[in-house]
Length: 238
Image (cartoon, rainbow, N blue to C red; front, side, top):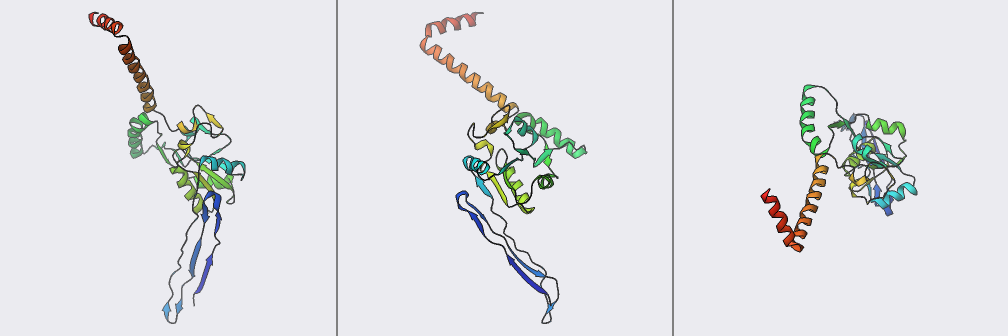
């Protein structure tokens, strides 16, 4: 006769950070017969930890009061532009330098469009991500995962929870949503601007300059129409 086991973990919560965690498993061990009928195969039902999404202020409290460690999961380029001081860099995606024919074509297309206009590197999932974190931290460690938009940190948190990590938090909407000076940072730009690169940033600067010139020209024509007419006559006759 098959053995039947059931286990249910406890429910824990942290009300001030809106965190809850519940895990339930129902297992039927082994296979056999019960009253002449084959037993059902093993079944696993699991509801994993609910992710802890926090604001920048709550994140600072987690670091200062509760001893959370910051892990930056962004790619190398964004990390080097700006990152939180004393954080650990474990990228969820790494630059794809594979040289098979298909990857070369995709990389070329990417670099000529997304890479050129938005400064985004051509990346692939980091196969060593979970192992890299496990080599540095124990499953009981308190970890604050950060990225630029909040998507990669959420995906990274899911992977780490599946690997047994329980005390994980992410900043809602990522570093792009925080205020300037919210964290002590290292790099050539502000944390919220670390995702901006490529021709888009140059275009933005050009647009700002052109806008300023046009406004000045409009004000000059409005308040000094005679001088503006003379300048226009000079340019049209030369």
